[in-house]
Length: 417
View 1: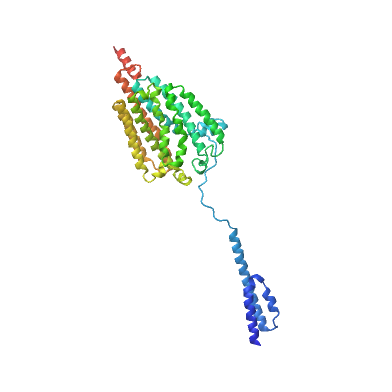
View 2: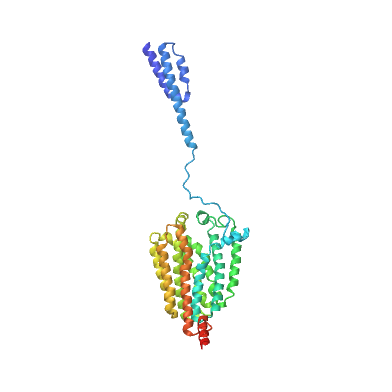
């Protein structure tokens, strides 16, 4: 009798352990039907405690698994947030009406370095042409002023076209995500309309030059429009930018009345000068591209900085040598004197060597500083050398109309006598 009772209790215990998580305290009701005995009461108490413990553990496990399914998966890391847009409180743009500010930012009026880079090839060409044609200083100043105005207008148009092409990419790049189109301060239609007015203004300015300048200037618009596309198909969009930004090298000679197609000497000089300016553009824009190298890799924008990230300074050095060499070739084609080579070529070599050795490509601030002021270091040095050559040529020829320095010397000698 006792053995049968124990066997019955063991079977009940097994059933209790198996079904406790589902039936809760049902084993208590099952043991209630057993004979009323101290031994049975002991088994009943022990099994009830085990059933309650098993039930509590099962409930805790079920609650844990349910809580895990409610936790969302971890989000992928995102770029660091940058401050929200704030209207400028200093500088030229801060004085403009509030509704004009997005358009001023669209043409980078607050960042004129690009305008200077576009202007310098025009100035180089004008100074070379002035030495070649013995143009008066007044003609040089007037022509240079027109070129600077044109550079301001056309650089703004180029920036607007670039932002229209990149309106889906700019929000993904930290440096460009607050541009007017990217932050939706200017709609694409408004930007397109604004571009039309800028191109009309550029055409009106181009008509102030001799008619031949019209034929030389208009083809550059094709390069301006295609540069943003080059960033999507080649690792060398800076070369396309160089072709566009250096186009002014063709303009100085026609502006001072020289027909390049009928003057082989001038054409050789202009071709060498153009190649020199293209090398310079690729050089400084390669430094500029290092500021966006991480974001460009993420969004799929190609650049020479990404392609040659590990040997950037070697590439920069090669470009500097090429730029100086082509500049020297331009002077040799025109029969320039030592002032040109020492002042123009020498200053280009010295300033480029300084920039390449000092720039820290891993630091955005250093890249921006050398890009910003490199225009004046290199461009200003070359311009000073070319202007000195212009004055020296006038002195050698004794041309009192072309160069006022020679006229001043004649005036001093006449007064002494």
